[in-house]
Length: 475
Image (cartoon, rainbow, N blue to C red; front, top):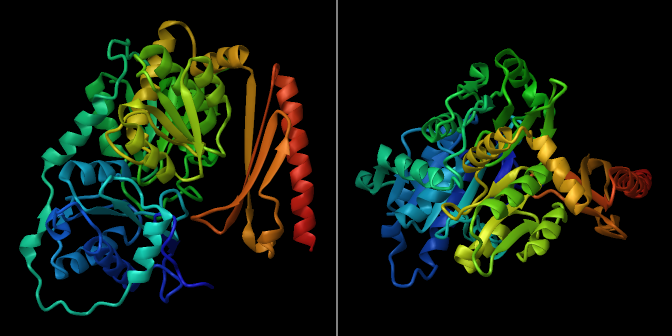
């Protein structure tokens, strides 16, 4: 196996001994790389040691231990260090970097990966994940460290509750229409992660009192019992929530991954069953709602990754709003936010990562959950579910359908022979290597004036690409 390398905003790997797995030694070496990186970076006259670095960790096994290792290295190198009193979400970490004026941020998480994984994500002073050139520098600077002779404990600062309040208030301010009835019934599962406290607190404060928590999945547990991986894109994680939702009659079900940057949503249909909304479907609903209910800036822009639904561009353009597609990875969306400022109105990636405000610089499942509840309440007043509203949008803009697949990279030895993009009328197929998992990721999409036309095109595209993939497996 290859040694773990710093990239895609940080490290992610299976926990274990050796240079090719994630462990305390790797965390220490990488934190040393981060120290050298900020000491060699120009902060416009500010001292990076005094600006400091803030650390957060999620509920995964060893997350707390790894966060202590990182803090030890920072303090030993004279870096002012901020830590939370317990686990916190990735979006709150990004918010804290900006709120505290830090030189960088660290979050110990492997997001939605299975329990064997953990990771080390780094954020720049903008609150966004590092870009590739910055990743490379930290990798080059990484080194062993053993001099703990001068530990100044005064450099270690435990953040007060007021810091949480700042984030909560910032999320509450993202509400678009605070006057909606808020009479929907909600079932929520944090999937054993960091979303439990902030989502419960924020929804209650916003007035959504009929909130039902899946208590069996509410306490932090890095073994994620009963599910293969804590990924809200996977329908199996909703099994317990569906049982709860049917018991209490919930209109919607929400699920967040352990670091609460991704959101999954299911909607109660008129048939009494729950249907999952994909990230693309949610994005379409959110963008339409934002455009319809907020005053748009003169140069408003939507930013999406290039493996996401082109329907957002159709909606944006027909409403005189710009839309730009960037490379996969929310860090590229965040890069645009700093350039756009208040002209940024919405950013997303198809895997359940969304941001409709500028309080943070990473996808935020917590503020997104609030928006989804607001939308569901608004449309319920009009006797519509989110599924029915989505159908109305398809009828207006055309049917845009998408599907994703993943293939274990071990099944394809020569990745260089895989076509990365297919030129197809009224559709697309994109193939890429995952930056965080040993997988080949395939994205398919097609559109048509009616649903059957879009479905036929989509199936044809998938069949064509999968024939090529199967040939590569044989060779």
